[in-house]
Length: 277
Image: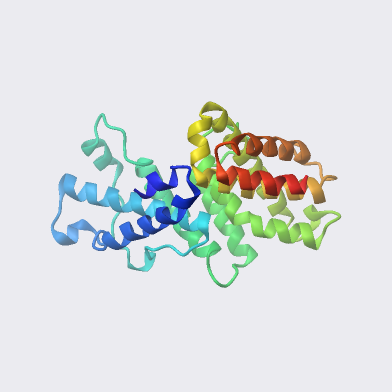
């Protein structure tokens, strides 16, 4: 029901989407403990682990997008990850739920540390951000030269969340040449991640505009990426970054403008982006 509300395309359904996912987390009390403690084995134990870690991934991504703390606290989680051998055994000739074992590993290695770092009350140190960025890129094996149609999207989105704050600090602390500021590396990293997100959003939207228009998270993340590119287009136009920032920003505005016909989130992004232009 949470996924349905989140993909319904109705702005009024966004709060129920969060509430229902939070409710699912509360109902799942007991699943945070490994099923072996209750005597479950075989497929039943596997199904319980898969259910919990798929729920956990949804909770973590919703926290990142909304800025709200996760309803499942990692301190109390004892549920083991399903193994690849179990997936092959119990889901033979089936499509794994979610992203399968890969998705569960990314949740543990990347998403949980990312939520803890970015949503904490006390701002993390720049070194902590750098370490987390490297951890994400190593875990998902991001190729900085990869084509926009590659499978690095999850890591790219996470990297954008990690770097965006220090990109802003760099742009404001050294406006003439932000690449020479102490946070200069974050300008390049945040900009490249934002460009990939916008390119991927455009590609997917052109394939299925009606479906894409309904998914609010896509447009929230795309708008965050557009803000990064727009900032560079205005304050860093003299920087030799590829692709050209102003052209990327205009292309993003065009997608928001087109999707605004059916998406309230895209409509909001269109108005905000147009004021920057």
